[in-house]
Length: 185
Image 1 (cartoon, rainbow, N blue to C red):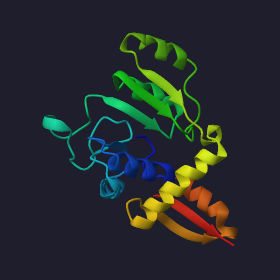
Image 2: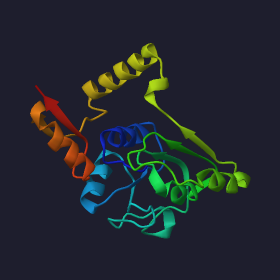
Image 3: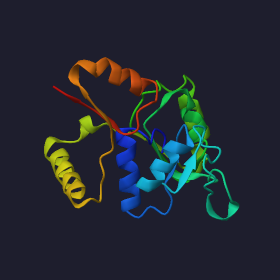
């Protein structure tokens, strides 16, 4: 998972681990963030390129470092590095872009995707805007119930007054936030 230290990523890591994923690999910028993601269910912590382990966490019998490939990539970041991660998807795997905070993929992305044709991988985008109101409420109710039971944790980086919204956005843009920033009136 790319972008695992943000609010969506923190939740996705917990959901994957809670649903029995045999491995949950995340990319992050530091071993400290990696340790926090491990507490939430990540099994492998990789650097931002997905190439190497930050905390000595290995994959399978091969020792430290990145898995040989991924069955599913959930990408909250997007941007020009999408093809790098697309190249790491296993045959019959799936790549799901759920955010684009890093920008659009490169102009030749469609050609890169077609170059992978023989591996039968799937590329999809997902926006919560496409989920109907009743379905969204059902999912939220289940997640609130999980939070009440303690099986899904909300990670709040900081609580700030609303007039500090610009600061909160600046810290998020600079990659200083782990989880969510809550703004209160």
